[in-house]
Image (cartoon, rainbow, N blue to C red; front, side, top):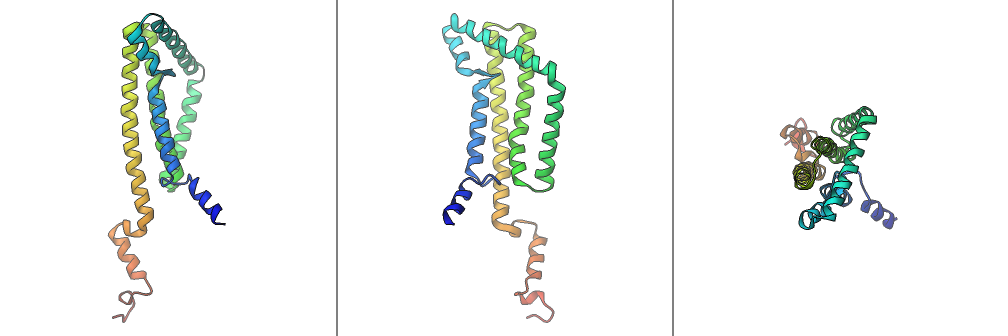
Length: 200
């Protein structure tokens, strides 16, 4: 069953040691950075360089996406907020209180994206209140993208540090823990004469 063991090791998603988790994390933040309020950022760049029809297309799709986001928040905002808080709290408790790495990994992806969601809602409200068009609209979308990128960099850094800590902890066992735990392990070792009465 070597092939089965190799396959399960390849698609293992239970910990930070899985390469698929880091691929998913990179794709997640790359996508979040490119799609600003659901608008591909190349449309923003094209509108700034060409103007004319490209500018009108950007204003139209921005109006559609902002109305969509604000409409969802008005109709189901409280339900979405309650469900999101429940899921995040559950993941945090399961992951960090009970030590389940998969829950930790999902939390470190979902929590920053929830911050991006709140930021997107605030940006959509700003666009609608100011009736932003032309350069003002592009400036708001560009600022939103920069903030998403900053959140992404912080999230990736924190996730990388926590994942590295978990992998080192799993690889080194109790030797990566406090000094007292190491001494207790030595004292409890039956092959160690120093831990037995009358030992040498």
